[in-house]
Structures are given as C-alpha cells and as structure tokens.
Image 1 (cartoon, helix red, strand yellow):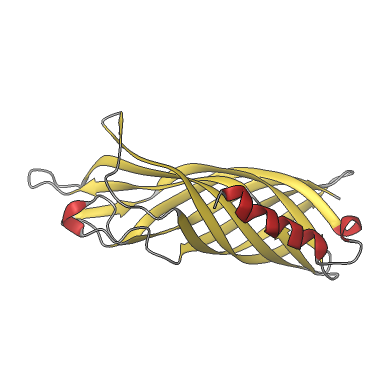
Image 2 (tube, rainbow, N blue to C red):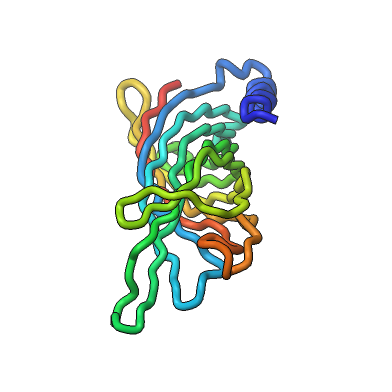
Length: 210
C-alpha cells in the first residue's frame, strides 16, 4: 500500500469530524531542529549519541471546543544517531559513524490551550514512513545491511507558545518524542542498527492563520 493511500483516509476523516469544519480550520507551516538518537542494544564498547537534523511540515488545526484542537501535521523529519567507538589507545570515544533515517511523518495531535490561547500543550501518536536510510563515515555515504522497518510508531509530548500578530500568529514549540517499536530485530554482531528505538527532542518555529 502506498503512502498516499494511507494518508488520504486520515485527511478525509479530519475534515468530516465536525459540522462546518472549514469555518473552524486554521492553516500553518513550521520548521526547526530535531535532536534524535537510538537507544536499546548497542555494539560492544560503543555508544549512541544525539544527531541533529531538520524537521519541516504543514499543519491543519480543527477546533473541537473553545480550548481543544485536533491538528494534522504532515512533515519531513531527519532522524538518526551518532555512533561512538571506544578504542584501547584513546581516552575518549571516537565519533566515526552517523546513521541517518529520513521519514515522511503523519502525526495527529490533540492540543489543549490556555484561556487566552497563547499557551498550549499537545500530544499524539505518529506514524513515520521511511523514505531513506544510510550511514556516513569519513565523509563517505554507505548502505546499511539491515532489514529496517518501513514504519516507525512514535509518541509525542510537547508545549508551545503563540505570539499573536495583526494577521495570524507565530508559535514556538518544544517536543519530546519516544519511539514505540524496534526499528530492526538484527543481532548485535550483524548490524550497526540492532534492536533499537528512536528518541529525541524537537524545537520548532511556525506561522499560523485562520
């Protein structure tokens, strides 16, 4: 099943959930930084550390009540990790490999706003569809010999601040993301990405109009 066949039913559902839905919609776009890493099994004497990537997308907010919104946010997200190796002749681990995963993500958030709607909290489950995976070592791009899942399920927790303008509003958001499933079930000795999940933080900036 293609990504588009997965997305279309969710878009239709969102637009049909409320009478007069179009009068309750607001649209926007966002971009920011994504600090992610793997956790779980790691090769002997190795460590996973944070990898900085980009995150960008659009949002469609549907007002359910005076303080509750549903927010569909299709986005592009660069996930990954740095792999640090411990060598016997080095005191500090050596950063020599970066693993990169690019996702098209489809989260459906629930937002709860303050009375003045300038502050909000949000949470969601997200399905991330793998677009590409590779490793970087010594400036060279290489393939990863592992059976990596095409879908990553993630839960988000976050908070944001809106800054009203004459037309629309700016917003800034901080999120924590936690992977719920193993990306692979590869044995340690056979892969750079054995049984691991993703985790990280996102700092996002955006603009939204009714």
